[in-house]
Length: 314
Picture (cartoon, rainbow, N blue to C red):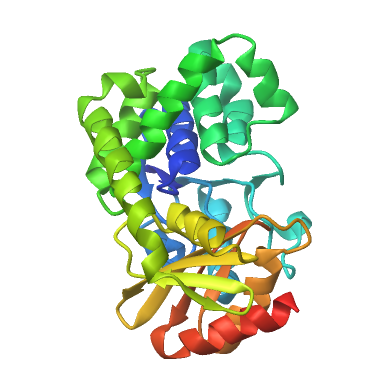
């Protein structure tokens, strides 16, 4: 029986994956995402052990994914750890396998709490890194863990981690090495390539900030940019801020689709619910958190997508 850890490639996913690996050192780590999880699970045999961290469940693939979960949990072992809002059609009571889910907490926090008895206590800082990376550090658990650390050092290490993985989206070997080092309690500042990448990407961020405004398109309450060579999430944040709109979108064209990140600061806007309603009608999929979400839409439907987002905001 093989052990697999499927985790997201962002800061929270990397840290959650590292904590899962520290508790299961014989497992293999793979990076996935909501749109690719179904295909990635096809390499798993029914008797294998599978841990999934920080990967939202795509509405469009949900029945087939749950079928795979049921098959794995029947003969092997399945543990799903996540903090994204669940599809409305999913019942926690009928979820196949072990299920750990909580809104408002990072997946890193949830993974640390679940595996805590098997972990070196010093790995609590990895949970904190992941929580900060996902803007989920103001929780009772994380605040308690922070009491054991100088938070100035913690924030430095988190900054190196987050800035270092920017621009390394599909460099899975690089990220797998980071996961391995974190699982062995090696801090980000000891990873030379990560530090170099962090400095490089911080400098690139300054350049992007100075040039971004001339690429922004504004349509109603939505500002968007396409194919800016930088982090989609950060670019969406800066796009919204510079245009002073309700929603900021950063997208990139890939194989006749547009992958995008959306950001808002308005507390009465729920991007997750909005995308789960809109994207299936346009041949895509989407979801995430109320203020930070992602979507994939066929390129020819992008203009219609912007119209639908504006209509939902009215």
